[in-house]
Image (cartoon, rainbow, N blue to C red; front, side, top):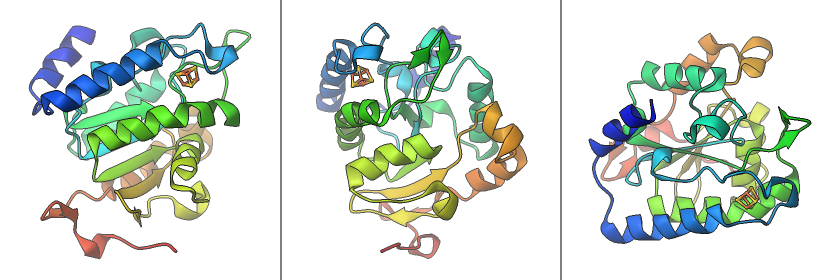
Length: 223
Ligand code: SF4
C-alpha cells in the first residue's frame, strides 16, 4: 500500500525545492525529538507520506494510532479511522495526493499498549512542528478532525474554539480558513457523529476559491 501511495503522491504538483528542503529538515528534527518523555521511543509520523506540500487543504487529527499511522507510517491510514477518512475524502472528490494530513501529536501515545489521547503538555510540545508545517505549506483551509486537533490550532492561534459550537463552520483566521470537524474514528462515528452526518460535514469544506481566496459567501467570521 505504501508503494501505491508514493505513486499517487508523485502525480501531484511538486512543491518548490526550497519548501521540500525545509520540510525534510523539519521531518528530521521531528524524528530526533525527545521532548515528550512518554513518547520518546515512538517514531514521529512526519514524512513525504503525509501528503502534498502544495496542498490547499491540511487535515489535523489527534495522534498516530497503534494500528494506523503508528504501524503504516501514513497518517489516517491502515485502521478503521483511516478507512472512514478515506471514504469521507472520496465522498468530496479529493485524493490524498491533493491534501496534507498530520496530527496534533506526531508520536503515538500509548498506555498499557493501547492508544490514549495526547496530554495537553504533549500537544503543546508538538505545536511548534505543526506551526512550522502550516507555515511551509501555506494552506487555504485547515480542517481539524476532533477536539484534540482543534485544541492544537487553538494553541497556535491563541483562540478558544469549541468543536460542539463550531463544527462545520468556516472560521477566518489571518492565514487560512479553519474548519473544525469531528474525528472519523469508529468511537466517534458509532456514538457521537455518524458517518452519514460526517459525509454532510465534509461536503461543507470550502472548496471554491477566487483569486486564491475562498469565496466569501461561504465564510463566516467569528470574533
Ligand atoms: S509528540 Fe512531538 S514534541 Fe512530543 S516527542 Fe513526538 S515529535 Fe517531539
